[in-house]
Amino acid sequence: MNPNKPEVVVITGASAGVGRATVRAFARRGAHLGLLARGTKGLEAAKQDVEQLGGRALILPTDVAHPGQVEAAAQKVEDTFGPIDVWINDAMVSVFSPVKEMTLDEFQRVTEVTYLGTIYGTKAALKRMLPRDKGVIVQVGSALAYRSIPLQSAYCGAKSAIRGFTDSLRCELLHDKSRVWVTMVQLPAVNTPQFSWVKSRLPNQAQPVPPIYQPEIPAEAIYWAAHHRRRELFVGSSAVEAIEGNKLIPELLDRYLARTGYSSQQTDQRRDPNQPNNLWKPLDGENGHDYGAHGSFDARSRTFSPELWAAKHRRWLGVLAAGFAGVGLALALGKSNGKT
Image 1 (cartoon, helix red, strand yellow):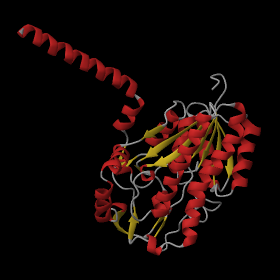
Image 2 (cartoon, rainbow, N blue to C red; image 1 turned 30 degrees about the vertical axis):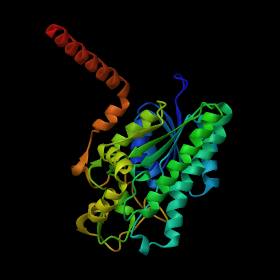
Image 3 (cartoon, helix red, strand yellow; image 1 turned 120 degrees about the horizontal axis):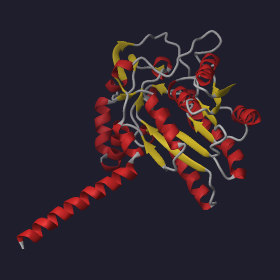
Image 4 (spheres, rainbow, N blue to C red; image 1 turned 45 degrees about the vertical axis):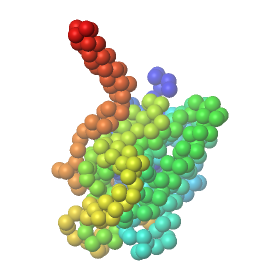
């Protein structure tokens, strides 16, 4: 990327949650941002964030389930700011419900937004990046792409599908010797507004499965991933444990989640049966309000991830570990020679 030119970045799901925090992370570095989401209030507030932090923003009300809207938004960004350097696929919706109570329309909607929306965004980015042989695509994933949990079957299926799609695409880019890079950032549970607006059939209010992280942590991970050629990045101890644990003891985790997966996704407060949801339309529309990046779990959320820090500094940690191993070996040899 040209250090003398502001980065041009597109972020889907930019109006709230992790997407909104990621908008701020790039704006602090002076990026020019194309902001895609359905809700106008959130987009307008996100644009204000960008301008206050020193960047420039273009708001593009877009439902990523419609490929024509995504393509039009991509073209508008390039017409306004120039070639897109980074495309971040973050838009998502979910439904908290047992499979037996899910409707086919709900499965279709979650799939169209979360999975197909990622494909449409990726295709729009590739259309522009491949001829230039440069650019980065960041897929915002989840530990649930590896280890599904009960009550979120549609979302887990969509995140798993994104991982499969991304792995295939990565192989093709390598085959073509393309310099376009695709990476996936796997998130833990995050304190975002989605738990206030997700469609739910749970008796109590939905919550992220603890431990919960503030959205600024994955936002910084996404920014870092966009500038380092790392295949994949795991954020948070729970993401690492779920992903690695599922490789070793998947059946044991099935039984564990059967016992704990219902209660861990609910607070002790009853859910308002009339609570509106954002599955079919945004809640921050013309008469709505700005939900921002944070949800209602600030008091319970972590502001630092040692696992992310270690992942970002693994080269130096490897050097340090090798140094300690060398010192240990030298001391052991010294003691051995002293005895002989």
